[in-house]
Amino acid sequence: MEDIRCLDEQTLNDALSVVRSRFNESACQQVRKLLGNPMRRICPEAGDIAYESGNPVVFQAAIPRQGYVRDKAFLGIAGGLLVSKRGASPVSVLSLMQKTNAPRHGSVVVFGNTAIPVSIKLNRMLGVDGLGCPSCGIVRFAVLRWGLFLDFLLHGRLPSFLVRIADWLGVLIQPFFFRRDRSHTVGCRLDAFDSERFDGFWSDYLKKNDGVVLSRTAEELGWMFGEDVDTGRNLLFVREDGSRLCGYIVVRAMNAERTRWMVADWIALENDRDILSDLLRDAVLGLRQIKSAAFLECIGFRMDVQDVIHRHLPFSRRAPNNSTNYKAHTPEMKQSMENADRTGWFFGPYDGDRCMTGS
Image (cartoon, rainbow, N blue to C red; front, side):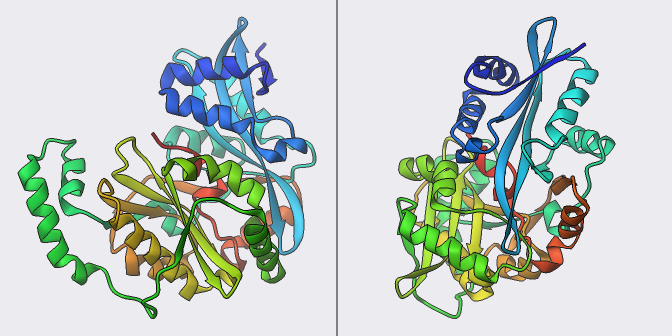
């Protein structure tokens, strides 16, 4: 019989051994980060580990997250980073996933995002719902430097003089793919999530929230993004109305060279489309100032803002993603999740573990 234990300070090394067997040290950093989640004050488990004959063989993150249905708080679990050692029993994998998907400490929903077909199939076997809106299968992107972008596609084999020529030509054609918005002002780039500014934003957001949304207090944002904002791996841009914060965007470097960037979080008061558009444009303009940045990607988010994304990220490619896996443990939560795309769930990488991953 499999032995399944929770991830904590005592079992951390066991989880790391499983992750290290399949991935690099960057993925191990992601596991360590789980233990710093402020929501562990309410739900201490940060993941689950399955053992066979006393040896750790499977690990899955179980990230407790605070959420809201309108202004009513709930506890949810974001499942992610499912990893098994080669040769691990399929029974161990399913047993661990069943534990991760079970209610704990009053949680009413398990959710996540994954691009792994096997993981999607296993979740379906366990009664996980939600195929996601069409945007979950499309990556939209903007090319920031054509030479670097082509070199990325060719795995660094493009001669340096061709990189420079392509970059120069890209500057000439850029106006055809990057349209100016209603405003020519540029938002502010910050280097920290100060509590007064971001807690005030979150309080204002909840006053008008009409759907499902995950909490974004300064403490939670600092845990999720703060360290990488300090190092420059994450960039944070905000929009303000006077002294009030009215929206922000976080973009994240997805490789060590910092050529590939992703929209990790993006939100505005009342999901205002003009503010969202300004924020996305700010991110593109800000990344153009970074010499290593080649392109910016975005996946997910509701269909009613896809034209805003397309305005600034004009290219697209298909991706085998399913960003709205969820299993509700109460009828009320199930109904809220089913209606989320129509009533306000602004689902993106923040609503799973994608914004924690990268090089």
